[in-house]
Length: 144
Image 1 (spheres, rainbow, N blue to C red):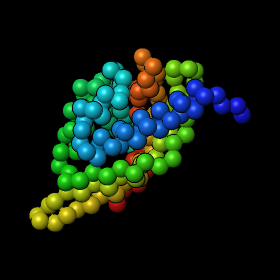
Image 2: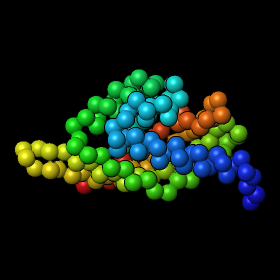
Image 3: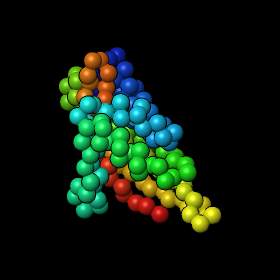
C-alpha cells in the first residue's frame, strides 16, 4: 500500500476534525462545534437494531439540539479512540470513530454520572480545501 503526502495530511486533518468536535462538546462551544459540519450536515441517532430514532439536518438544527442536550449537564467528557478512514476520492471520505463519553449532572444534591460507548460512522467532504463532517451516524452501543 502506497500512501502519498496528501493522504497523510488528509488523515491528520480528519483525526483533528473528529477530536475537535469532541473538544467543543466538552466545553459546550456548540457554535464552534457546528462549524465542523457542512452547511447541510446531518446527524442521525441510530439504535442497536440499526434504526434511525432521531435526525438532525443543517447547522441550525444541529446547534439547537446539541446546545439543548448538553445544557443540563454539569460536565461533559469525550475520550476519542481509534478512527479509520477510507477515501472515496480527493474530496470525499468515510470513517469510523469511537468515543467514551462521561456526562455528569446534579440531581437532589447528588452527582449522577452516565457513561456511554459511542461509534460514529461519518461521511466527510472537503470544501474550500477544508475537511468537514457531512453526515454523522451516531450509534450509542452501551450506557451505564
